[in-house]
Image 1 (spheres, helix red, strand yellow):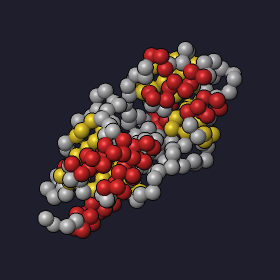
Image 2: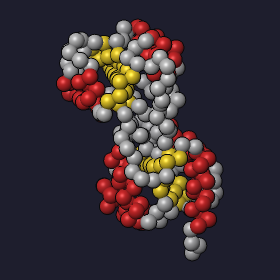
Image 3: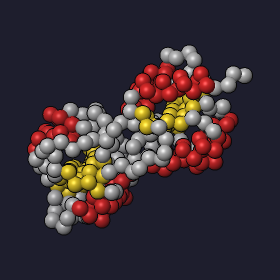
Image 4: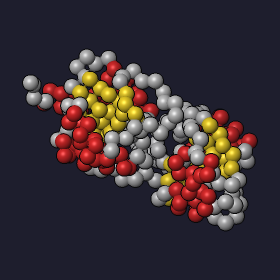
Length: 251
């Protein structure tokens, strides 16, 4: 059974390891190509976009893909919409595999906002020291609030022209731990954390560290996903593939 995994996440890499040893599956992992040095994978990979819905439909048909798993980042809304529409047109089974978003617990000082621009506005007019962990593609939105000092952490560097004028860049890749995140926030004298509610354990320690230090968090909420089965457990994804493998017509 030929399976396309739309990846770029911890969950996608974990799923790739699970399916790598399955002789009854022929998986390929698709990466967006936005990370300069992606981690090595145990299954064949492709990198780059498909060319919109039409391009993805053409790929599904040309490669005889029999099932698709959307394991993209929770904020990859465009790719998820394209996957849903392409699979509908090509009549290919589709499920989403994603981590659940973080949930507020006692002690959290969250303000949830719709997008990066709203987060920049919510920082206010008084200068603050901001830890910004939203990925490199959203940094430019914070040029609209140049009065703040930004400590920007990203896997890859944002374009230089996107950086706010008063900013320091830290290039690092998770997972992180709470002690390290606490030390970072203390050392940089952070006043507020700005991040996306991406869920998962790998980057949750910054949320725990902010709670420990009593810091406010501006949390960008994830966009709504298209209508498709959402499976948070990798074993449930394997069961989904097994059901459709058994249901697929034999040549």
